[in-house]
Image (cartoon, rainbow, N blue to C red; front, side, top):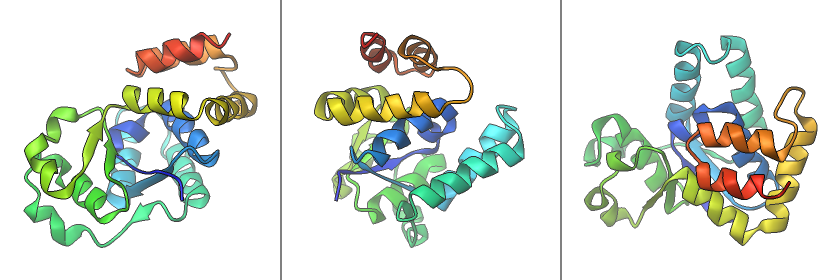
Length: 183
């Protein structure tokens, strides 16, 4: 089994970053995990912010569930009340604890203070750091995953430079710089 990683809603929110991450997971760099609550929030937030039409986000979610049927964690609801991190993200930590992952990838680092994580041996990692780790640990698989993603894109980005620009705007600038250097 590949390294298990739990993704917070904010990490899956942006379609391109989500596609990069899941393309890497498809190559075997890691095993992704999430919960129904995470996917519900992703779907709702993308639609509410006008980033995509409801049917497009629904299709994206269905494809995620189809490609990673083992990723959805269940049976965490009873733990939510005992979590001490930010109230809005307690469902995320509870689902992570139930999953096989000890790494939680999120932009919301402040919502998961170390004292709330310590009892569960969970480490919180920013997506930029996580992507850099994957690029360093699995350079061939990572590049193959990104090449395959770019090849199947029907719209831009279609090359490393334009992908890097979008990733920079998605708040993963160091990983973006490394990918831009592949050109």
